[in-house]
Length: 384
Image (cartoon, rainbow, N blue to C red; front, side):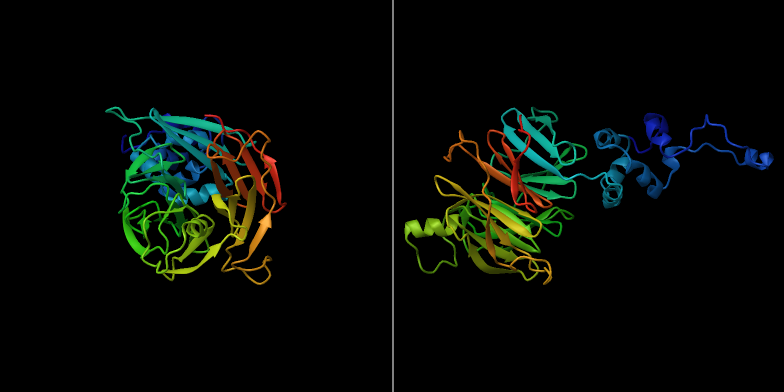
């Protein structure tokens, strides 16, 4: 990658930023003056603010090519200023990302809202001595920061949603599998998934460093993470090991119920744990996500599913509606096809997009819950 930029490589971009030289324009009155000060203007001579205006109008499909022009363009594409400009120009779309890891590599599928809900797939081959995907992520979690997605296990990589590039990042302090991950104020928090520790870790993407910030009240495995209003939610899962806060042991059945249908709340700003909450109907939490100030929890009762909404708006005003922080409300359960059986072969995932909650199955079925209307609808099937 070169340090300088050449306009001939992206003449199509120049056309949107500069007038066409073939068009005839009135000549200036003082020709002699303009003749002596005549010089060639190239795109590399533009200041950063004008170049950012040009780049903010590039289509999303062309961004991977733009990032390869030169180091300067690659740096500008990584800036928050470009992200803000594209959002102002309505060039940012809410997108759901789905990753599947196999021995051959990493499959990525994207569902962009506002684009007829069409899936787009890509593949990053496994590393074989050269470039490729090398990090094992079979039990990983995904956290979104800006346009980047960090996939974590013992090691961690960052996936750039604009360019499709993978970058290795610092690994966690403790190796984990099937843990909870959530993002608050541009930092990632993880808990659970480690048999020998109950540590809650924090990742700072600026310094690329992990640190332990607290000890969780319960040591969970297979838990799910979410975050609303500066609070990290560690939801569901099974018990592994023994937590330091557990003074009175519970019976095996009661203990399993407490873990599978409850969630622990960590206040990032106060650096302390809040009172744990439990799903009113019990059951086993199989999926959860945050959307529009609420935490949505999907629980399984062996033969049926129940869908719950937890009011997580600690900073909500009195006129914002709802019952207030900590209130549970049962909402309409997802309409599963008759051929789908609730057993260990069916896997659920849930992701929040503005006021919608998207839930998927291992087979690729996608159901979309409209939080405002309280209704479910079928989305396009995700095929690998």
